[in-house]
Image (tube, rainbow over all chains, first blue to last red; front, side, top):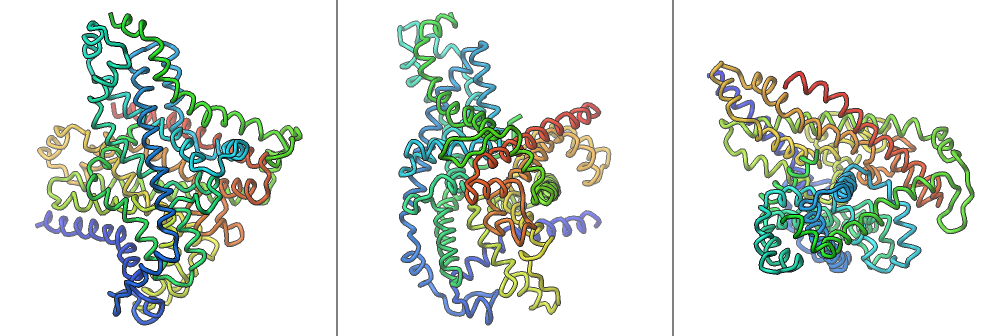
Length: 275
Length: 296
């Protein structure tokens, strides 16, 4: 009897917090389909009386959604590619060759995890201006790559330690060089951490705000989170359309979450194991 | 054998390791020292600099905003720890209990705010907090509770409102990390506790919390340092206002950089942020290490 009562309390708490987690989003979806009159006066909470899908059409026309999407996708793709490539190769070396030099670099890159982004912001702005990167998305891709390395290394390092050295040795006996050995034999073993990192890195890039705000000053280069801020400051009065734009820009991550929630969970909980 | 393989392929090893080292070195390591260097100069980013010694630091510690900024950061960090680690631990514990059905669904739902970008979250909550048409005040009206607040435009509510949004967004993430730690606790402990007739609360208090302590410590460190380096939510929701009520060090740094073009001063603030974050991390680890030994 007592445990039944406890269960009711537990479910109540869990459900209550579930509502706090998602009701704001439900509210946003609802107002993205309403006009101001309905949101402000007649019907703030319920389903729309008139479903105004034109909000989405208007938002799509006013808000340069395609440009921002394109920028975000380019940034995410190149960052993922570079982080994967650099971290895979680098970690292989530090996992297989243990000496003072490799241990030093391992320590150096791992400690990058603890450094606040503000520490390098000002020099990055200067570098970007001085070398004329203000006109290209490389101005964020390269910093994102550097910032992605510490977590990627932590993820890959453990996996490499689990691979038996005999794999390389037998191929070496047959006369293959390290380049061939790595790409033919080692790399195919790394599939699962590579997938986890793709997803982790995608989410990190897609939502990054601080650096993008400071490094991407040209409107046609802005990524989605920045573009959204532009849109909302210019159309603050029209809640429905801004809501529609916000929902459109969130859809990609939701789709990925739907298909890869397990990998996301793995990646995120791995990122906490950094000590 | 082993060493022969790698010895003969030294060129490959250097080629493999070089890209990561070059990128990390030029984007993180060198700029870190540059920030330190610039912090001793009067410098607008373009023209040649004048050496100031510690004047930028003196300016920082005597500035009008420094006290508010530090107090705000402390409050913000404590709020993050209580909300994210507190609730995160409780939920991580509940969602590992076998008698709860639908655990997976709750875990999915709690994680959803983590996926959203900070611009979406900030705008969404700006409207939830809106004084005239916001969700909270409208709800109060609907329930006939006369307690309308101008949430983002008052002294303490603005800071707490922003801290709440950041906590709301990140709770699922912290919970997931603690959850992974709780899952690693060997099942025998819980079984033994059940045989001894322990209640759920006793299990939580005497098994989950102490055995997941290393993970919980990591999340506490994360939350506290996040409190001191938090920028985006505050920047988007209040921009430091009303007045300087939600100021913090990162907002001060942004203003020094972008508004005043004073890169030397901005660098000094950046150095201070790094010192605080690394210092706190070291301190918390030192203090809680002792606590760990008691349970081992």
